[in-house]
Amino acid sequence: MNITVASEKTMTSETHPIITISNLNKWYGKFHALKDINLDVNKTEKIVICGPSGSGKSTLIRCINRLEVHQEGSIIVDGTELTDDVKQINEIRSDVGMVFQHFNLFPHLTVLENCTLAPIWVRKKPKIEADELAMELLKKVRIPEQSQKYPGQLSGGQQQRVAIARALCMQPRVMLFDEPTSALDPEMIKEVLETMIELADSGMTMLVVTHEMGFANKVADRVIFMDEGQIVEQNNPENFFSNPKSERTKLFLSQILNH
Amino acid sequence: MAKQIETFVRLPDRNPPSSTIGFISWLRQNLFSSVTNTLTTILFCYLFYLYIPPFIEWAIINANISGSDRSVCDANKAGACWTFIKVRLDQILFGLYFASNPEQTWRPILALSIFTIILIPLVMENIPFKKWLLLFMLFIYPLIFIVLVYGGFFGIPVSNTTQWGGFLLTFALAFVGIVLALPLGILLALGRRSEMAIIKALSVTYIEFWRGTPLITILFMASVMLPLFFPSGVEFDKVVRAMIGITLFQSAYTAEAVRGGLQAIDRGQTEASMALGMGYWRRNVLVVLPQALKISIPSIVNTFIALFKDTSLVSIIGLLDLLNMSQTASRSLDWNGYDIEGYLFAGFIFWIFCYGMSSYSQKLERKLDTDRRAE
Image 1 (tube, rainbow over the protein chains, first blue to last red):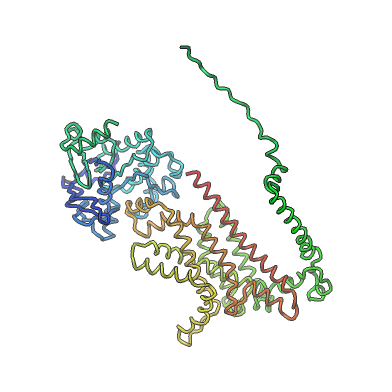
Image 2 (spheres, helix red, strand yellow):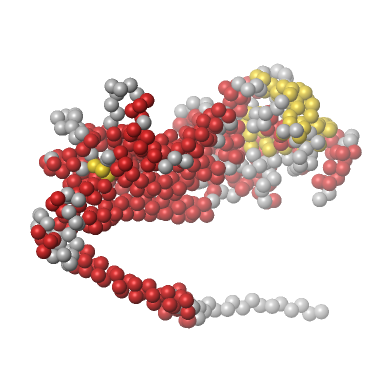
C-alpha cells in the first residue's frame, strides 16, 4: 500500500522533530496526571506508548492536539507551539489526525459524508475532490462498498477503519491512535491492525497508545512505557521486550504478555 | 465407554391456548379481571350511556344549521345552534376586519392554504427538497403572510392589526412564537453549555427568568410596561408586542428542550470534530445539533402545543384570539345565549391542531426508536 497522503512535505524535509514536547506537566484539579514529560517525535517515526490504565498515556497524546490542556511546559507541533490561540489550535488539529477507542463516527452522516465533512468545511475542498479522495482512502482501508451506509450499519472493525480513513482525508502529517482496538471483538482487531501496519509502511508518523505488543514489535521504531504520569522507559522494540531496564516495565510486560 | 449421541428433535409449533387469545379473553383480561375492574367497567358503560347519546342527539341529530339568524335555533332548543357558527365563521376564523369586509376573506384563506400546502410535504417522509421547503417556510412564508393578510402592497388594502382576531391571530402568534423561539432557544441552549462563564451566566439567567414568570404576566408587562421604556412618540403595535412577549417566553422553554437533546450527545462527537480541526460553530452546526435536535423534537413539539393553547392569554391585553373571538361572537346581541356552541367550536379547532402536532411528534418518536434499533 502506498498512502500518498503522508504528504510530500513529510518526505522532503530534514530530520528535525515534527513534535517536540518539553517539560510537560498536566493536572486534573489537584491530580498530577503528567509529570515532566520530554519527548521528540521525528518525521515518519512510529511510537507505541503502553502502560497500565491511569498511567497518563491517553492524556499525553490528547495533549498533542489539545483535547486536553496542559498547565506547564510546551508542545510544538510542526513548528507551531500550542497556546490558547483558537485559530492555531484548529490549524494544528487539522494537521494531526486522531483515531479514538470508540470510533466517534458521526452517526447522522454516511460513511462517505463522515470522510468528506472536515475536508469540505475546514480544508475548503470542492465536494467532488473531497469525494474522490475519500473514496480512494476508503479503498485503501478496504471498505469502498460501504460508502453510502451509515456507521450504525457497520461492524466495529469496519467503523474503526472508516475512522482511520476519515482522519486520513485531512491529509495529516501525524496520526494519533488512542487505544484503537480496545473496544473491538478479537476477530476485528486483526483487520484494524493490518490497516494500521499498511499505514505505517507508507511512511506516516504515528503515535499509538495500545496494548497490542505484536503490533509494537512489528511496527514501532520506539516503544515508550509510562506509569504514574511519567515516562518510565523507552527503547527500540527488540531491547524493550527482551531486555527491559526497570523492574516496573518487567512486571508490566510479564502481566500483559503471559495472559 | 460408549459415546451416546443425542439427536435433536425439533418440536412442532403449536398455537397458544385458545383461552389466552381472541376478543373474549381480551375483555376478560382488560375489563373484567377483578371485582373492582368489573364494577368500574359497568359504571363507565352506564355513564357513557347516560351522556353520550344525548350529546350526539343535541350536537348532530337535532342540530340546527340552516337559516341565517337566531329564529331557527330559538324555535328548536333541543339541538345545537351551528347556524351561529356558520353565520359568524368569518369573524371567528379571521377577526373583525375580514368579517366586515367579506370580499377580502380570500386573503387569509389563501395565506393559510399556502401554509398547509408547504406543511404537508414537510411532515411526510422521503420527500426531496425538504431543506428548501423548510427555508421557504421560515423566511419567505412570513413575508407572504404579511403581504396577504396585513396588506399595504400591490394595492391590497391594509387590515389594521387592531382588528386582527380569531384563528388568524392565534395562528400568527403561534407561528411567530415557534419560528423565532426555535433559533433563539438553540442559541440559549448552546449558551447554557458554553465554557465561557459570562455567556453561560447570561443564558442561565435569561432562561430561569422567563421560565419563572407566567406568560400572562409577561403579556401584561409587554402591553403596559414596554411603552414606558421607549420615547413617548414610539407607538408599538399591540400584536407585535404580544409576539415579542410570547417569543421571549417560548425561547426559554425551547432552550431547555434543546439542552436535553444536547446532553444526550456523546462527548466523543465533539472531540472527534475538534480533532478534525472544526471550530465551535462548525462542530455544533454540522455535528452536534443535527443529532441533538432530532432527539429533542418530541419535547420541542410539546412546548409548541402548550404555546399554541397559551395564545388565548392575549385576551389580557385586549386581543381576541380564536377562543375569545368565539366568546365575543356568542355574546353579541344577535346570538346571545349560544356560547356553548362557540366554546365547542373553538375547542374543536384547538384540538385539531394540537392533536396534529402531537401525532407528528409521536410518529417521530417511533421513527427515532427504530433508527436507534438499527444502530
